[in-house]
Length: 187
Image (cartoon, rainbow, N blue to C red; front, side, top):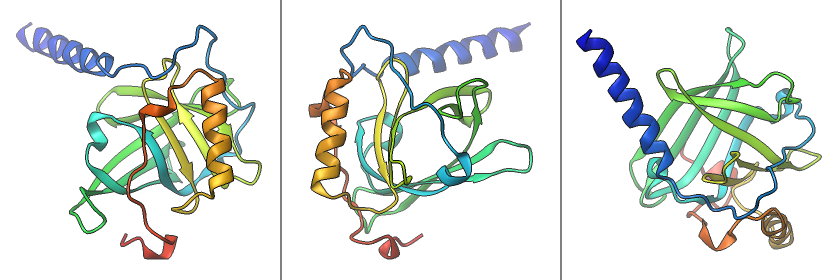
């Protein structure tokens, strides 16, 4: 019985910790995702162009996310960052993702520990899969991702305009230090 109580308390604490991330979206309209995503085209490496601050990426630079198919039908997720600068210590987090049925592959759930899953919604995606914008229904987390570590100014401005039109506070975005070229990444 004590084990069950302890597990319930730990689960409650973990869920409560997730709720402390403030929302960066001020809109009563439900957040929409793209219509569909070709997962095979989405897989591979993405560079983080911008993000909302969050506890698990605090101080991260040179952030990448690598996605690949797993034998069990899930998607492997490997997030890598360099602590405090591109010369910093490498930090890696291994996780898994699953597609939400009926979402056209635009809504996923990601887990980095145990049975806890978080929403991962693709809300904007380039037709050629060169960039993507990812959030979750409450707007607490937000990422602008690209296949290259740098995004041209016009493309970035268009993403920021889209986010503002969708109710996101773009002044909350952090733009981490990033590599000049994909080939420069040390991992």
